[in-house]
Amino acid sequence: MRSLLCAAGAAGILWSAAVVPAAADEPDGFTIGDPRITESSGLAASRAHPGIYWTHNDSDDGPYVYAVDGRSGRTVARITLRGIGKPRDVEAISTGPDGNIYLGDIGDNLGGSWDHVWIYRFPEPKKLRDATVTATQFDVKYADGPRDAEALMVHPKTGRVYIASKKQDGGGALYAGPQRLTTSGTNVFRKAAPVDLWVTDGAFSPDGTRLVLRSYFGARIFRWQDGRPKDLGSVGVPIQQQGESVTFTPDGRTLMYGSEGNDSEVKPVGLSDAQLPDSVKDDPSNGDGAGGQAGKGSQGTDLDPGFIKGAVILAVATALVVWVRRLLRRR
Image (cartoon, rainbow, N blue to C red; front, top):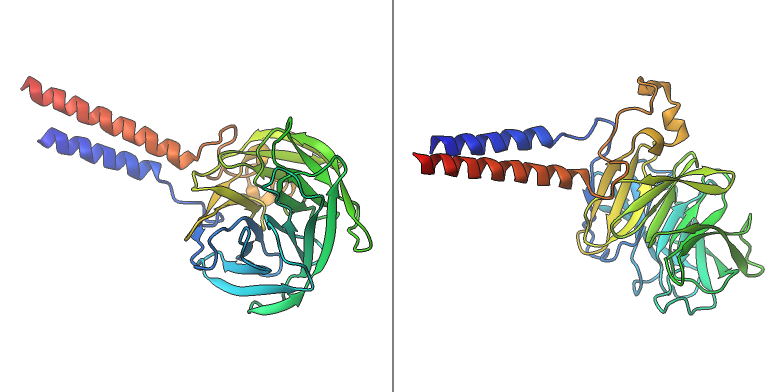
């Protein structure tokens, strides 16, 4: 019995050693507690309000965008958009360098059969409270025909809008919009690069040097150079009910991953080494000259490091229990 208790104690020590708290500069995750948000499909860190994340439901909700406090998970504002048509399948959200928020009504669950989709743009509110704002609506088409897409990203330096389509008919792709969107005609998005991923969301780093594209179970990060992505490999993704969204924290060090569902969790994954945006790697406050310490992320794997730790702990604890049982039988 004493040996069994020792084994349990050893397993407990291993668990304590493996569960390392987040670094001081790495944010905690949070749970979206608003019962109105059941299909959080996009996520964007606010530029004007530190600690606030913008999100929205998928379809059948209406022209609404929600500001969620990243500390409490509480909704602090619901913005109603006017001046636009009825949203059809809103899938993505991004902030631009012009002080505007861009909302992508770009989903097409009918296999890419709609001849056009829409982007809505509205100023990020200066005060966080329920309000109705006038939005601008842009018509969008793809140069090579209709596509189903769930990721819209605005480059934080150039203001150019990009859309990543889902993998279909030979593969997904990254599409670049015109230099400036216009309301006087259709905005044609042209293929900029192939993307071999079932993309559900994406985001640019705050300095514009990194692009992350996620799928339900994995993600890849790219160096952004001369308007083109260079693949740097996979980046850690937490296990979630239905992985739908991703955004960088304002300091560029961490990815925040969101999911659909009631009380959905937003989970952080820290970046390290080449994954880090250039502005972070060049920051002398990192001290080690190599982009700072690794966070909770894991380059080259799509599994959540916490899950891996848990699996290792379970395996070790099981081995200890088996060893104790054999020892007791010998007695």
